[in-house]
Amino acid sequence: HICQDFDIQEMAVRLNSIGSAEIRLPYLELLRNTLDKYTGELCKTCETRLKKNALRIFDCKNPDCQEILDEKAPCIFDSISADDYQHFNSITRMLNEMNIPFKHDKKLVRGLDYYSHTTFEITSSTLGAQNALCGGGRYNGLIEQLGGKPTPAVGFAAGVERLILALGKLENIESPPDIYLITIGEDANVQACRIAHE
Image 1 (cartoon, rainbow, N blue to C red):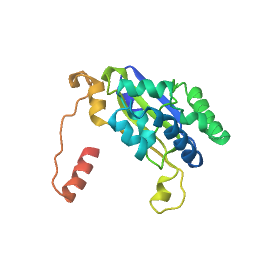
Image 2 (image 1 turned 180 degrees about the horizontal axis):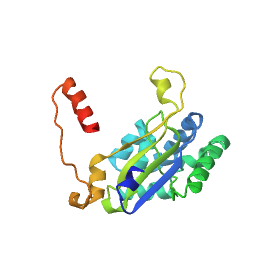
Image 3 (image 1 turned 90 degrees about the vertical axis):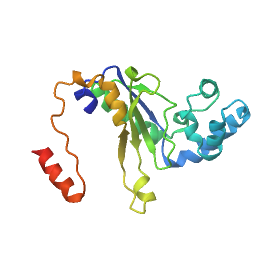
């Protein structure tokens, strides 16, 4: 809704499922065994990621690495369980019901261990190569890793600078800010929040 309110142009939603935690280790073993044959052709960053955090290899922008990933690497989506697949279908049905267009991108992953099931990214082609406005997904394992009870969660991070770039020239915004509040100290922060709210 934020992106729609800002009238950001040429937006696209990419969506995938990386499945449940149970499928992760077998998939990573398959991925490493497959890509070990191409280590001499991968960039140094990908070679390091393959050993330490193999899912992050899909973040590489190197065209040679992308070609190997496109042609040789198994996608995690093809390893998800029947329950994971049902969960993904329910998400896509909801998006279709809300008339939100999306593209299923089997290479869209998140490299942090607490992510599970849905991953997503919202992009704008007006930004060029660095086109991501925000990205996130479901992370059912996060609270438990921090010492809490197993708790389903979902979230995202957005790049403020990317949003500003996607907006174009600031003078095109109908209601630019009239006042900036600059504060020092916690008491001033509280007062500034009250003033901004008013």
